View (tube, rainbow, N blue to C red):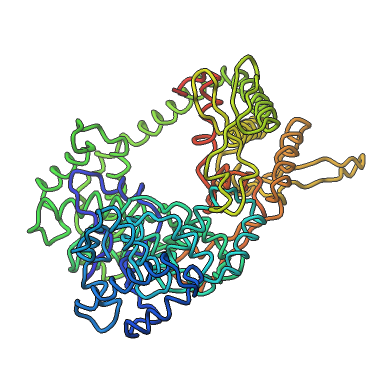
Length: 630
């Protein structure tokens, strides 16, 4: 039986691994797919006739075009010496499809020219074969080839009308030049690898590129998110969700969650799956997943690793005592063991499983074989009440230490927002290369080459403002800095005036602002609707003048970038593909601003970026000198 994502490291707490595990599908089964071009079975002469029709190789005979044809034919003659039914099979058999370009030496063997000249000329012929879709390169080969001009030619040859539509879509989505460049490069690589046109790209094609990037580079592929949004905007991708939402793992079957920890097939595994299936309807998915991480990962998988001969749920005393001793500490490679703060919680969860089985056996005899003594005695969990009081006291002490600094934080956030806005205004008024003075410091307006190169990205960026200090040469992205300062101020002020939790803040929508007419006086007062969260209670808060000013500033900013009318659409939250996506009203603290970044995240909006308090407010918090900001 194949078990995906099996966790077998014994020196790492399994529940913590599961807690930090990305809830994302990487589609590893798509990585490394091989495609075949439309002229794969033609002869050399027929292929050369097709390649000669490319716009970059006009019919006029000149020395440059003749050299291109000669080098393309040289590559085809070299590929013909390798086994295979078509050109793609010979391409793979020759070893030319990897990240190593040493095969160029084999093709040019015997050429009297220098190595640089030989490689340049043979690359020129290879471009024709790639653009003619004679061979379809792997992403490893495309990445190592590093030919930006090749990607530009793809836009000219592979349905340029569709690339024009993508450019219009980028303008409508307020993408800046760098993101357009990255998106078009990603799309060009997909076209070269699959041999398709833009209107034939599928979600699996983009997931394949994403899987390759994760496997080879261990990070996301630059421009892939923007490419997804552009293709979705022009109707090529028949989806209504973002890439991040589409790649969400969703709720997984119970058996799959249990098997992640490498439990052995057998009666005990089957019993655990049945037990968790019985518990699942009464629990939310996050708590359910954590329960499996504790009971299976930290308990039973640990028992099986240290005692492979164990085949009973009734553990001997010495086995149970050894497990509890290992559970007391978190052990990480190269670090000293640290006491586990959730030790008593885990003991209580394991004890609850045994007590449930004993109780269920009284009503259902099928549970009777598993109604055995618990390895966790009642007295071993007596410290739970005291432990919870200690945790609560630490939280309260943290609040008491930081509350006196709140006025300073508020003042700093307001001043930092105004300072960054003024600096951005001054820089935007300057021309690239000009110097200007602001607040006693001299700055120089700069423009990245990728923003000004119209040949690569269509036209220069209109929104990104970059400067560097004249004295130190430090480069500053003022567009992002001002955006971060604004959202830091907005979040701090909203939290201060409402007292809501972070999750409640991130769930605010434009429909949360409502009005109420007092029956006695007829006065209309604004109210803020707080959706149910931890307390599972809906609330209405009176909006004062200061909070109303903050919310008005947020809405005005969203309208300035066209984000106020954009609803949030989520993909299915479970593994059943028949469940349709869900659309929510626009979130107040979610936008795709001029830097194509999103200020906050939300459990209801997985398409937006990291939490602003942690990611986009560090400069504001650092300037205020709040404890814990360093």
